[in-house]
Amino acid sequence: MGFERLQDLEVKVLGSYRLRTVLEEADVRQLRVGDVAYLSGAVFTMRDMAHLRALELLRRGEKLPFELKGGVIYHCGPLIKGDVVVSAGPTTSMRMERSEPDLIGFTGLRGIIGKGGMGNGTREALKKHGAVYLEYPGGAGALAARSAKRILGVYWKDLGEPEAVWVIEVADFGPCFVTMDSNGETLRKKGKA
Amino acid sequence: MDASEVAEAIRILETDLPRDIEERLRVCLSGEEGNSREALKVIIENIGYARQRRLPMCQDTGTLVFFVKCAGSQDRVLDTIREGISLATREVPLRPNTVNPFTRENEGRNLGRNNPIVHFVEEGCEGGKVTMQIMAKGAGSENVSRSFMLEPDRGVGGIKECVIETVADAGGKPCPPIIVGLGVGGSLEWAAYLAKKALLRPLDRRTEDPTAAQLEDELLPEINSLGIGPMGMGGRATALGVRVEWAHCHTASLPVSVSVQCWALRRVSAVWDSSGFRILR
Figure 1 (cartoon, helix red, strand yellow):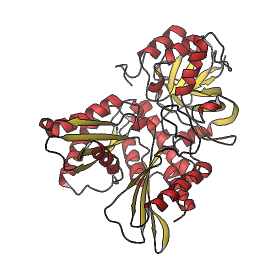
Figure 2: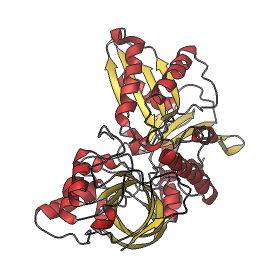
Figure 3: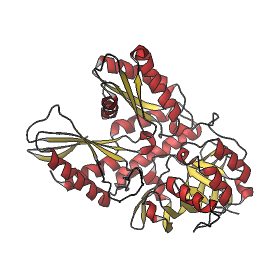
């Protein structure tokens, strides 16, 4: 479900895929470092403060107000005006490295979109739980926002606009490059960012 | 000088990347392959798209840093800048980025205690004229910038090691291809100020100061040999350029500051004089 191989892209890569949330483990497990994906469905923006709050709740045994099982989170603090996503590129993923392994383990999320790479903790968690890390080109926020079709909801707005969890419906959001897969492979061999 | 003019300068700053930077990015494209090349293509497409639609190119509209020359009242200029930021936050719009560093509380105004950051530059002030250079500095690149207090025996080799170490450790985090601002000498804060000020100098003009020019020429190929590449995905284009500013310093000190700048080097100059307000590109 939600998984379609594209044949007609000029991109010189291993494979190009069209993904639709919610993602299944079996689908995610097929993705490899070097693949390119275009994502449709819902993404949840989560960055520094949302990671901390989510883990605080989950470690106390409480539920999140939104469902991340099979979902995709986006390291992004979008620029929003009214109900329009104005600019929405990725933020530096490494800042979330201390929280990410536990968030993956607790929630069963299947995809993370960010930029700049992540560390060994995340690499291990992706492998163990069956999830994938993808990167959209940093700074290309205006173009990224073109893929945002509408805002489905917002949580934790008290954290401030960039730190809140925005649920955004995207259509063919990409190219998102797989730089860490569920086999423990990573684009950046040193495990550094 | 009024707030709406400051807001208009900020709109151009956020939506229209300087041509010297765009040109360098285009030149880099032919040297890249695979996904690094694809990422760079998206970056270049985004520049044109943002300019055409008058949209902030990056959702991180940054910390605004002002370098101001004025002969008159600094308080009045500061008030107008604050009003201009409020207006720009609503209208450009800017993302509300400014928070209390301890509580992380965000008032949504892009203003706060000791913020915005305004440097009043003393040299070259003319009566009746205000010149303002504005930068929008994103956190991805600001977070990997560093200052070093070297001991003088480290010499020029030590200065270069600071730059290479900073860029290598930053990897893909600051959105390469980066521009490196290097400040040498002065004092702790003066070196950091010079490093950021260096980023204001365009990449399409050769640096006049021979010491700075030589460091710039030597550092760029060394940085690019790191192979970090566009977005840290590997490749030749790790940096588009290096810009150096320096000052004399204490005989026992060698302050070095490395200001790392993402590819989206957003800078604009605005002037108010007897003929009114205009933007210089």
